[in-house]
Image (cartoon, rainbow, N blue to C red):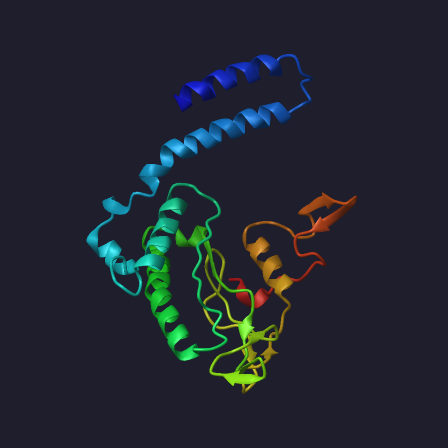
Amino acid sequence: QQQRMIEELTKLNQRHLETLSAEDERLQARIANYELAFRMQTEIPDVIDCDTESEQTLKMYGVDEPDTDAFGRQCLLARRLVENGVRFVQIFSGGWDSHDYLKQGHTSRIKSVDKPMAGLIRDLKQRGLLEDTLVVWTGEFGRTPDNNKRGGVYSLGRGHNNKAMTMLLAGGGVKPGVVGATDDLGASASECVHPIRDVHVTMLHLLGLDDNKLTYLHAGRHKQLSQFGGEVIQDVIT
């Protein structure tokens, strides 16, 4: 029924398109969007069906294991989406905001992501997908090295830290190794210090995009995704 509706809408849109100027591409873009949305709906059930995966693959991601099942399925689904031509995939692991109960909270969270993360990178590499895929694991900030203070009382947790954070990049064009370091306390970045916009510019570069040329018009001004521009972190690139 939905397919028939899309087909009838396409006929009406095509009829209307014939009355428009050849330079007006908006309706043609809308028709293409309708068709893309329908194709996605019809193809996605097979893409997200993990029952076809081997037992070895499921084990590699930690699927059906208590600590890793939820995030493992996300990582496996991410690989299947990439394998089927999806160009951007985002997955999420929550529960890291440990202002208190740090030991219990972070211990369980680390267990939940460690095996699936390694499994995803290994699986992408085995299938010849890793060299054309940029994998980025990151949060939005780091954590302080000292106990957190909430309401005037110290708790066994960590506060937000905008002076140092850690992220992992793998795959397309990324050099193996460690870039940068913190001070002895882990409180501030001390080597190869870069603002986050440099990371954004580096990611764009790895995707074949020039931050200086990739602009969008907003409020009468051409703006960059990095806001103020940045530099490619050469130590990251092969």
